[in-house]
Length: 181
Image (cartoon, rainbow, N blue to C red; front, side, top):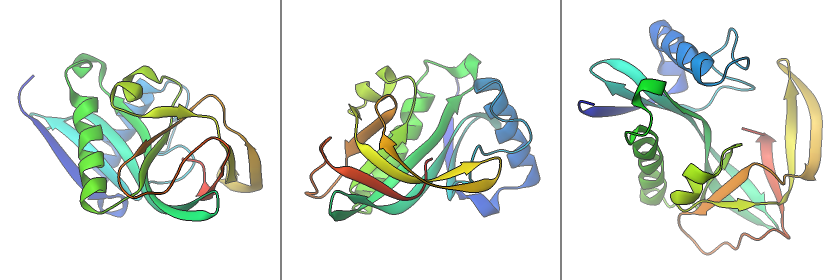
């Protein structure tokens, strides 16, 4: 693989061609989930795009928001839809994308990086821990709000402390103060 270039962009700055490339990559990596939109439930605020020789080979969506961790307010980067084209997998693309997120979070004193994923091994190797907190979030289905959902998330939430002293343990309720990303 030649040199990897990672570009961080605001979602609203993406060109039609970039949105089409992202959609094609998402459809390839997550069959059945992305039919017409380059996002699943809601657009991310930013994208990290990984290019090799001008070809999009990986991407992730990035959410920056405040959440409630128990009775404390914390800042997070939420990682959304990390994916890498099959040909470039196991060559460090996903790791480079995640390290870019974490370095940006560290530079700006973000408390945690948080994500929801079915496969945990990759993230745990990067220092994320699987957690089973009770969570509150705004449900979104077919482009419509469905109301607040509160339940324990036992199978897919991973978190990594980046900065600060806010405690995170499984006895605390996590209020995402918005949609589940």
